[in-house]
Each structure stands twice: as structure tokens, then as C-alpha cells.
Image (cartoon, rainbow, N blue to C red; front, side, top):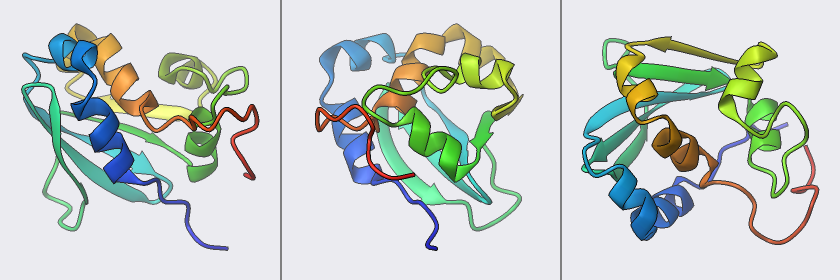
Length: 133
């Protein structure tokens, strides 16, 4: 079985072409870690725009905060209509499906922005099941 890997180009395109989301994140300039299974990705944001998403290759490279979950958990979160407990990062946190650590102030100050950035990978094909998990 191959490791689930989302299409980060889609995330960048959806975030960087969403005028409302860009406006909401206009003051956000930072790096954060998005952990998918055993692999961490550094997501770099400048003035609300996602500039790069790259696999974290050096353990000393970090971000302001990290949001980590299993690949299966992210697959469920990114379905068109996610199942209960997978629809929101804080619902996933309450069920211990996701971990959040690091400097949480920028996350909390821009919570809806980050929730929308992460949800930008949601399946938009119109299916309700989002495919195989």
C-alpha cells in the first residue's frame, strides 16, 4: 500500500485564488507543519498566500506550530462531506485524531484562516464519500 499524499498544487491554487481567504489571511506570514502519517510538510505562507509546501527533510527546520494526523484521518477530513468527527480540526482534536503543538497564538489568532487552508484539499468532485480510504 502506498502512502497517501495529497496534491499540494491544488491546495496552493485553491488558497491563492480565493479572494476572501486571502483577505482573511493578509496578515499571516509564517511556516507551519502539516503532518500526514509519518511525514511532516512545511507549509510556508506569506501575506495569506501559500508559497511553498515541502517535505520536512531536516529535523531542525520547524514552523510556528504543527498539526499532525494519520494519513487515513486526513483522507476522511478531505472528503467532500467529511464524516462526523472528521469535519473540523478541533472536532478531530477532541477525539484525539489529530495533535496540535507548538506556538499556538498565531493559530488561534487566525483560526478560521488555517481551518480553511487545510480544508482547501477537500474533494470537490461532488461525491459524498470522497473515494476509497
